[in-house]
Length: 337
Ligand SMILES: Cc1cc2nc3c(=O)[nH]c(=O)nc-3n(C[C@H](O)[C@H](O)[C@H](O)COP(=O)(O)OP(=O)(O)OC[C@H]3O[C@@H](n4cnc5c(N)ncnc54)[C@H](O)[C@@H]3O)c2cc1C
Image (tube, rainbow, N blue to C red; front, side, top):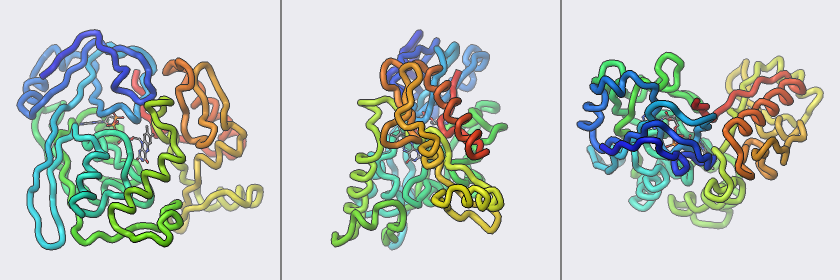
């Protein structure tokens, strides 16, 4: 177990904010974690478990314990002719895991190529892109409870997954389960999902296999999203909002091009990026923060922004969208203070 005092989180958040935490604790095994969960000083402090910090916004220095898992490794649990089940340490880098699956010709997660972050958070967040969600392939999530110190294994059903949501993100469970491993089930006979975004047109005339799909997705993402190493950001700042069909129909009269993704008979999803763009906010700045010029759903750290600059800009976006469309945007990025 590694413990650091007054530690900079600069390398642990993709907004590239140079904030500090009073304590930073990194555990390397389940044994380490069990010890930590019995430590009275630790249990008396405010704490937050992080992954790579690619979906977090620190509003100020953290006066408590930031915890990070260093548990790595990929273990084959079982396999047959059609499927393989792998147990992956929470600290494995998500995209390296996707690359490993693609190289071994195991399908299921290729559309989630190039999403920053770690395997542990993929299960917490239910990451999604190009018509696929992590929960489509998650079989089990192995955790320890902060409250009882005991191990609990969640089945996919128990994780209560939906769009960018899970049991672990529910208000009453937030921060209470530390994920040590995730079990993914992958297919040896992959079925490709290509009807989303620009994948189909990108792959036109090319052979379709796991490698080419992954390559297409990486290329599309690189052309659309700023690289956090160059321009700090946390990907989409807001979740695409759900609207009741009556609200959607009334907006459609005024804005015939408003995007429409059916959810069920009564509910549709629309595009947060489109709403922000229609408010004329592309490129808007506040302090060192800015709405990205190409992708208005992304807020970037343009020039030494503080967490508060970013939060205030997000608030202005939220207000503008509400005034124009009467839609309340919810943030996908998690605020930590
Ligand atoms: C450029 C860019 C593009 C992105 N594109 C996408 C995208 O297409 N789709 C998408 O879904 N997301 C996307 N994201 C968001 C981000 O990549 C995901 O949310 C990712 O899962 C975050 O991983 P992380 O390891 O950085 O987690 P963090 O941001 O550190 O943490 C996220 C949450 O998970 C919790 N957590 C992390 N690890 C553990 C653990 N081991 N145990 C318990 N709780 C834990 C944290 O407490 C926090 O609540 C993007 C981000 C960026 C910067």
